[in-house]
Image 1 (cartoon, rainbow, N blue to C red):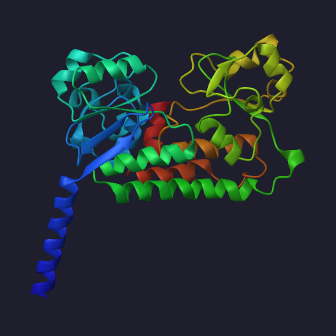
Image 2: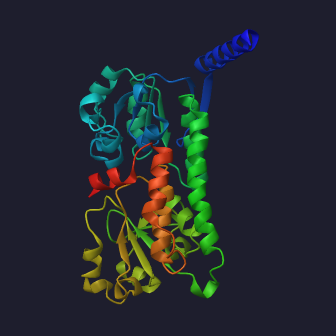
Image 3: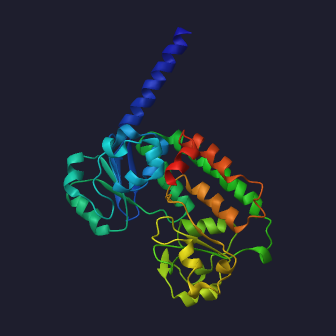
Length: 326
């Protein structure tokens, strides 16, 4: 038994040593090859901080986006987040002086402003820019972050929980015949900005077995289109980005939309303010599926599924987060 215990101790030590000494190379969304020594001790998250919360790497977060201060999940997990983790702005408005004071090993941001990424790099910072454009790319980013913090097993556990929900959705919608498939669109910051053929949103529409009519002509992430085109598409269901400055009532009460099927039937829904670059994408997908095909998911209890997911992934109750959101 002493020999076995000694072997376990040695193996544990070797595993920790390998983890601490590993160098991880990653090609980011801007095409840059970045090599990082893991585990990362000081990271600044301008994006994907909802994932960092799932990995429980609070001690490795040197700074965070100012948007994390109003994020329901982050507030539920760490109520004192604004006091305990400094902010250096966001990926679109970086406070470079603060960022340099934080002395991060790595900065995780998005590709919205490549010039900002270049500026940070010119200041000697190691910057990784992400922009998951599919579910598989999201998983890739998640697995990379697992390697950054030596949390590979936790990431696989999170992905497994996501896949449970995706499998449930697939099982329910796979037998829906072609003539019952519904058309649905996702609106962005403006009511005429639609998600196109590229992106996580379109992947979810495909997973749900619905039709995104915008994908046929908008061969990009998103685009502004004339209201007449949306009327011509005549979607059965409309989803609105959770952080948009307008809501379902603005669409339902606008005479320009009155001939659209989704408006006629009152099936216009504003998504919660959750990131789609997050494990919570799975719950969003179930919410979307339930609103597109309510008759096929009528016995699936969204809140119960979300409760199990939150407890498994984040270790907290969905209800506690939901109260903050409301």
